[in-house]
Length: 242
Image (cartoon, rainbow, N blue to C red; front, top):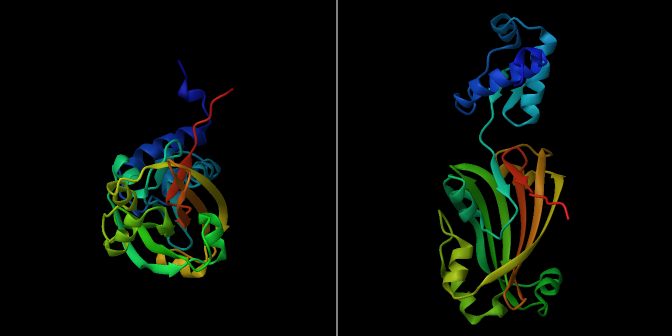
């Protein structure tokens, strides 16, 4: 059995603070370093090390001149199956919602045409939305739908995708099967125009995500470019040894 008294002081303090944080509300202020030192009888070095680890895990955030606060909840997405944002949020126990920024038929540029294997100038649907988790802005998704895959897809142009509406569910209602997708992700600096939409600062850490979704007969039906707030979204992968 593990003797906790033999564990480093910062580790024991970190564990204690995690229990305290779990009972606090987002943006609630934590005691100051001086108060933590007095309460737990530890050194300033121990307190700072524990707080650094908690901040690294995304449980707290430090605001210069104001103090340390409980972070807002982060979404953890396990990349093991093809799911849309709405389904992922619901399965994790969150309430998904969206605000449509752009929803219309546009002419495909050369990049979109190449991805969809269509001619430049052919019509595709653009759907750009802010995605929310329990009312908090998490991502901006800029999706393009290949209308040439099936004539029925044009009906999506008349759908309202504000609120809790799911694009994937609407596609599946049309009898089209989404079979698989290719994902690409990289860490970038949040662009200024997206920072304003996601209530964060320009240059903050962001996840830039590209998805290409295919039907069961191998046609690319969806192409999405997304910016996710780095402090509100966590991706986890399950790896197995071969």
